[in-house]
Amino acid sequence: MFQDEHKPLINQGVVIKTNASQRYATDSVGAFFIRRMAEKRNGKVQQFEVRNDVPCGSTVGPMLSSRTGIRTVDIGCAMLSMHSIRETAGTADVDSLIDLFDEFFCNFSVLDASLAFE
Image (cartoon, rainbow, N blue to C red; front, side, top):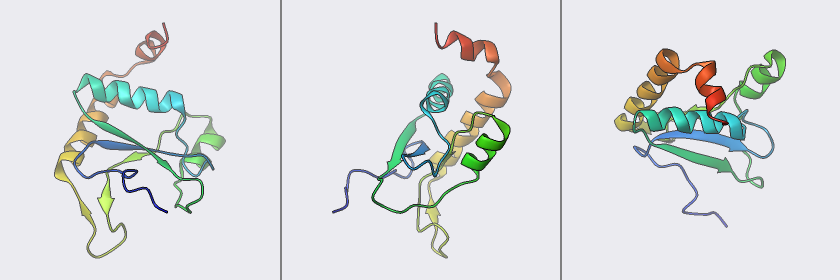
């Protein structure tokens, strides 16, 4: 019933979350930009698509994107037992996320984005 190989892994990079029911705001262009920025820092990313027959949570991403028109990408760190007293995450993923944010806020420009499509 469940796919054992289809899950984000701790300490294997930032997770880009997508969902066919649009419970997450990520689209292919946004995911491309995240992967490209991570590559500049030799970082790892994981793509995670929630199965369409399994209920999942949501984020504020779809609402923000639709109301503001700003490209939105739902990303995060893989973890076990979210919202539990035993919630566990990997320290390497936090470092990867910090590197990704640093690349975005310090080096990303609209010019870089336009060059990506040439």
